[in-house]
Image (cartoon, rainbow, N blue to C red; front, side, top):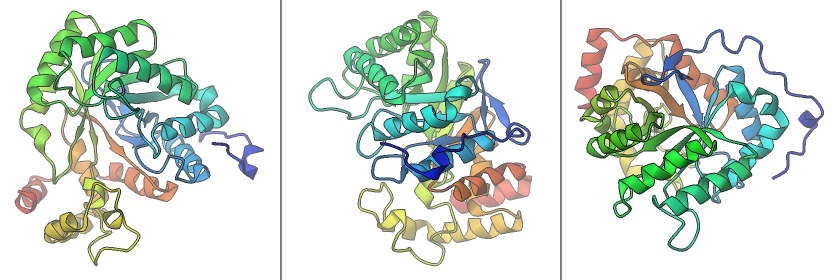
Length: 337
């Protein structure tokens, strides 16, 4: 997709103070520091979306010190379009800053028809990284993830493919996503034997979805692997958006969304109580929810989506108040447990 607007004439010049205020956290025991808040391109960057708005969000992110952009082969819609749009914007605005960026892609979910376009076979992963690099116009990604466990393909095959992707220079690091603790431990052992830098596990984590606390965070810590959390706002439930009802144009009312109106209604009293505490902390609920995740030492970064530059700026303000008193933590625990 082409960018066709007046801003093409004026070359993008990033904010020279972009690194002054962002918080950076070490990723496991690796040498990589990630911004505490990273930008996910799951939504709002496909062909169905406005590419100029996507460009403004990406520029805003980099200006705020967000160096990590997270993609996957099937982000869109349609599949592949988020990577393609990102590639278009990258060539226009970010190519000169490639070494300041940490770009991720993934493969593991449905991507193309037939038996070789899904899950974790060597054939699928090798083809996926090649396609992703072509769409984005990159020589390599900084990290390539297996997006979900494959119940049928041997883990040795999947991890071996990731290892070869690194050896071929197509990725610098590898990661996994959505793996349970036992699967994660096995993957870590295989990758260690292969001498491949396994540095991140991407997991769904929020106040309303705490499965990572049941063993995964400890497993990651013992293996020197960081956690990067996605869906920190529970698809928008952990915001003030639904406190006074469900807006017609909200994600909860969209058929393609993972969020639905019942989820909102079932949690609204908790949301109202959490919102009152956030106000007491001089934060928005969304900001407090992000800060609550970042208090975990194993969490290297929190992935947020953004439909606008202003929304991204509001989320980054979570970094203005990352501390919690013991009383606040007890109150939160009482509300959400």
